[in-house]
Image 1 (spheres, rainbow, N blue to C red):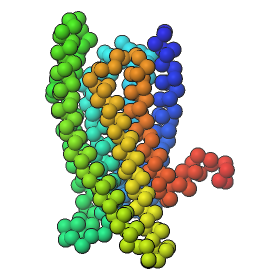
Image 2 (cartoon, rainbow, N blue to C red):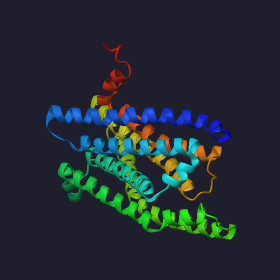
Image 3 (tube, one colour):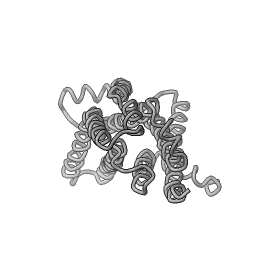
Length: 304
């Protein structure tokens, strides 16, 4: 009962994150599908946003279920929600969200940056064909990462050693092994994160060069192009901040440094749940095409 009462602030925060996440990611899915139905043509941006919305919708649900059951039903959480199936789903959704965000940053680079290099021009003109293959590769890479997480024997060792009648030295060795295994598994996330950082750096350099070159140009063109660069940078930089906090909380939670049921443990869950909702809000606010429909969704009576 004491644990449940202490978890009330956590439940309030997580419920707010859940409602926000379901709303904004559902909005991304619906608005992109609506444009698809009207135009009967799926653009690369719409495809990426649909993938991001669906994956984050799923991640938000998984994180909320884990957070609420860990607060009010700890035995059920330990016995049922830490099995191989849930770990696979959690790892898959975490990985695919990073990959999809990397695809989004790569799309911004191809769309906004001007270059005369032949390979870049080849990619730029073939963006509609390249993006679906990047998204498919993201799915396959995420499945591989999740399978690797299961193959390290995480769930079996967790049940046999951590929640069993293990001695203190056995638990210490297990924690060390688990930390090493999880760090090894999450090395698979280094590559998409490195690509993401490279795209962010390229966008930043492009913005600086664009500002320098267009100082004496047309004010209207300069303002529009600069705004596009700034919106793209705002989207990728805020994602980077959200993901770093999520990844740090995720790794801390997976290695059991923080005891379950403590305030620090609930704080980790809240930080992780903020990621799939917070960055999607930034995507909507940074896109002028989404702002008015989103305002009408939030205030339907006011816009009648």
